[in-house]
Image (tube, rainbow, N blue to C red; front, side, top):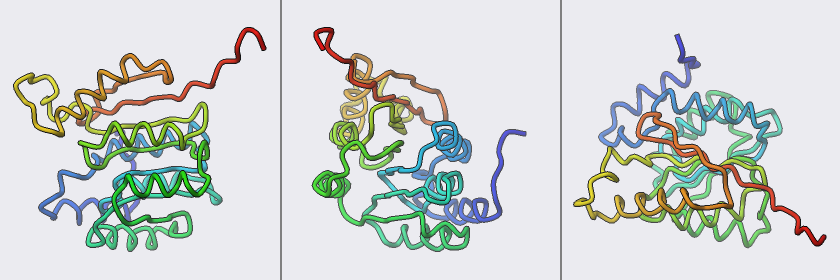
Length: 210
């Protein structure tokens, strides 16, 4: 009695479930939660790292107002072609801008193009070993009082296994510890699917001398 999906969302999810990499997809409850965040924050400009087949971007795109935009980044057209087909079927293709290439390159491009403090909401779900670099770049790209959502912060529980020193595990473990102490953001880690962290960029406080 919780999940609401359109026919296009269901079809995309079912198609993705048939892929060997289906585990990369957000859970349907996560997609609905991202759409909910778009609505309650009034977001118009969204940045996503990790398009895959478009499940999360489809949900957020449907929740955005008519003049809303999503910039979504990925490297594999065999997946993003599926996403683009379903964006069009849902009638939201005009809201979508796909950047192909390494996510760090796309983030540098966005900053060079003058997009600092432009985005209202960011969803990070790409290459785990680069999570810290994604986080630092998106902190520049998101406006004060904007929201960064980070997926897979539990990493199937591997972050708790101190004997697991695999690069992705180390990267997520380190970012989790960093976020815990980062006073630039307010923080909430949610036990939703494989763990999602919400980091709200605090507005800069004025000096008491000003």
